[in-house]
Length: 348
Image (cartoon, rainbow, N blue to C red):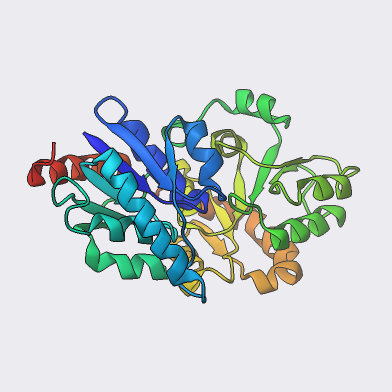
């Protein structure tokens, strides 16, 4: 079986695809299609898969039709070379030229099945446009969101703490702003730490992103029990030491929090397409496993929200709700759908 994934731009578009690709290693040849200047250019090769790059731009703006037309032509060449049995789009504007090319008669060896993974509560523009062009749409309701095996089976807390350079015994607030960091979150938690707003029995592990990490680390250099890192390729160690997470509300983060059953304070990215992160966060808040804190209230309200969250009764309630979450095995469900689609269309 020959499987081609298309997706990129953020970890939320890449890590679900890598989770499924890893599960297919023994039965399929896997390739990725993405862009040369975004996150996939480093993450995909590091995961051990070939990446074919094409031109792509968001579906708005004057240059978009011309760049994406070039991307469609490049996608035709890639698809003719790879001859996939199935194409799986996992999000990001790079999916548009690749899926469009896969629907051009004669480009692939047959009518190749195309699936679209939509992990967010509200689809973005690209996925809304692609949905009528694909054979199946997979989402949190019908398959779940794939999570990497390392996150589904966390390492021992002591070993993870040693690798991260934190105290294995002290309770840990894990702060992460997504695959590229979040400046508003970095600034708010830095102010919190400087003002003594983190309880003395807690420590903070801040994944600040490559752009801001050095400045944040310098700002907090004299604050005890704070560890600042640029990035974690695999969040398993971070989750293994965490007792509470403060994070954006991207679909991948939400799915991973459910898989590791950790309570959270979720701060949706305010400029996300169709405000989908707020919808993601509200769904978790309704389950009782998270507190939603709007980005525009972050600086003013974070100290009070953290104090309220860590009050013994409230924290116990959040932990109990998080522990009760049942994320299911989305990887197994999607692998089963891949086999069914390929078998049904007879492309192998």
